[in-house]
Image (cartoon, rainbow, N blue to C red):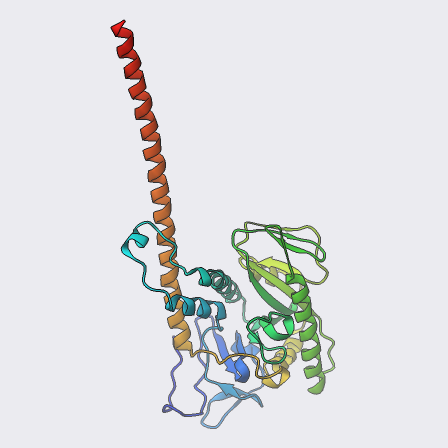
Length: 344
């Protein structure tokens, strides 16, 4: 259900809270932070002028129904510049994704898988999406200081940072300090560790500034989407490597480490935009636009599946024709040999 505003266009007032079937509230704070959580897990609510609700002391922008999907938007942006496929391209199942968009397409699939997994968390959990960590992010700079946090999860089992990585169909091997995908060594573990340390420092400082004497422990997580295999030979210290499909079950199966009161205190500080560096994230789309983009991406996924089916169909047809030609050829040789023998 899309958010409804009872105020005219251009109004600065905040729409009423929107609830999903799971009684979940989605808030977008200034600087691009999006919070997902049960209404009861977002503390310090007080009526704003006009009877509307906003976390005390924390300005709230219009409500968001979905987290930002940056890879999805990037993929669609690349695709928008591509000319329509020809009839023959569609007939023979040519891949509909532009070459430069294929990496972001895989990233979008990972984003959606993690978003679906996070939506399965119960009301005790709060999720912050796209949280900035430092100065303005550069497109070619994916260091932890600039890329921010894909997702920050706070609940009974503790505080978790999620770095989402797309490795569909790849063989992954994880050691104490090593992450290898199809033989290629990657820096996922180092970046996840940097992110966890940055959050520990920023959130710990924000809690102290709020007068809350609490020593927090942040668990960095590398969440991988649809790998062919995932072998964790040796756990990389405090870093967890989990698949997107199993993340929610893994998280909710952890022992309870924080009381509801402590979780509420942490969330109250974490949702404050002042707890995080500003100016790091691009402006987020409206909820309606996000749904529209996701629907467009689903249509693109259908085209990819259809093209794959056509390629398999043509491959199967080629195999059948090849075998048929061999059989006919063998049959012709046999008939020729028989005729020659009778002639003798």
